[in-house]
Image (cartoon, rainbow, N blue to C red; front, side):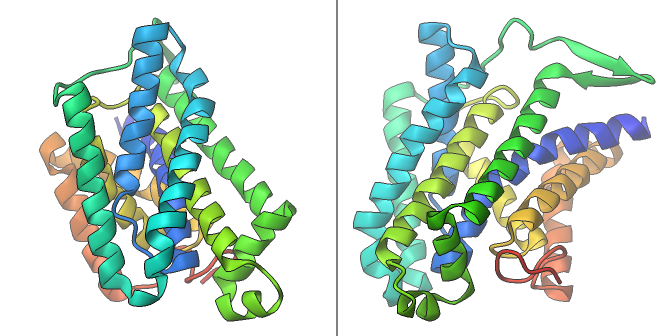
Length: 290
């Protein structure tokens, strides 16, 4: 029972970590808490559903499509909506992204209704059994792919010119500007990359959770908690925080029932926020450890 609970939490945590990376990165680089991030996850889930139901596309193969579409969405939203308000303070960005989230959610309600939908490929019910522990193949594949995408993004940040520009801007915006880094382009690329990762997480989540236009609302709270657990802007911290959040939910569900997992997770979040506001695994920016 204990090992099953741990495995369930870890498998779910990988997807939470991937969903959080983009949110944490945008917060760390631009100082914006993007409340529309949950809507990006929801859009990625619907792309997987449409591909599966209408075109017979395996949901894992929809991930590149989700990433391309959401990159464009995130890039354009940052370039034309968020960029003009970067210097106006946190409150306006919260209001704008909250409004954007409502608009995107309502558009999908109009287009798809609020009915719950699911993506269940033929192999969805298949599981591995190791030492008495059941490991659903879909969850295992989703977790492995989520970690692989997170690692791939780490390589992009550390090995490419644009990735290094994002890191430099996260560490010190003014110094990066003096060094000739174009902040407008860097911010847009950051937002696009963050949205792309959210889209990938949404496609993976489509196989794990019921889909509706309100899926993003259920994710944004988890993403916020994982960001605080891992440290704002800490890529590795987001992944570790995702695993920890998954474990917390899994143990809470096993101990107190399914309906209590969110309550327990948020209580622990509040305790950590008071005792260690920089997060458990990182400090404020990429590449720094507490």
